View 1 (cartoon, rainbow, N blue to C red):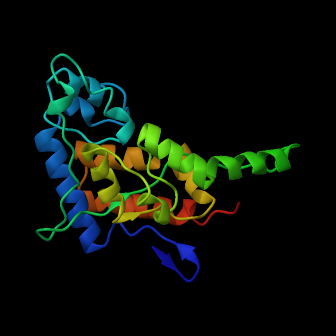
View 2 (view 1 turned 30 degrees about the vertical axis):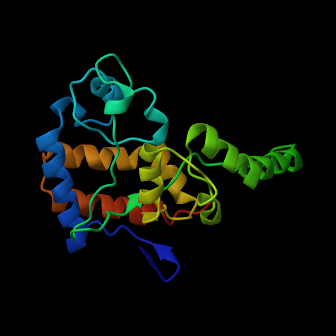
Length: 212
């Protein structure tokens, strides 16, 4: 959360604790113990699903094609948005993607800026949405894209999404796998959720307010 121009961790708030406890319960009940780890590739969730050994998993639109197999035909795959706490609502989700930027000391900043404008421009965003199912980077473009029913669910979920704090320190959060470590510890359950939340609030307080 943001207060007075600074960002702080809010995992220790009652609603945050309740959400983390719910995540822990669902993860422990519905997932293999091997998934209680920071390694997101071993085991491969999409490979397990394609082999017919899992009923569902969470991932992006780009994995829909890798899920298809002789065991799991394309027509047998469906998508749904995560339900919210109140019946008939959706849970807010993270909306993000790769970070695009220009190196501070790049000798070709003008060319790099021109490329970024081209990549992030309307024409390319609509093309990527049409060909790959990616969600455009502007809400006014969403209605201009026709996608299949499965991908349309992702667009529906994006309507109630939230983004990461727009501060330089978030790059360190990602580089250090802070979020992966947090959820791995919650899933493992070796410490109380409240203890883990307090520890990571302190990490966020420091990382999110570090200088550029």
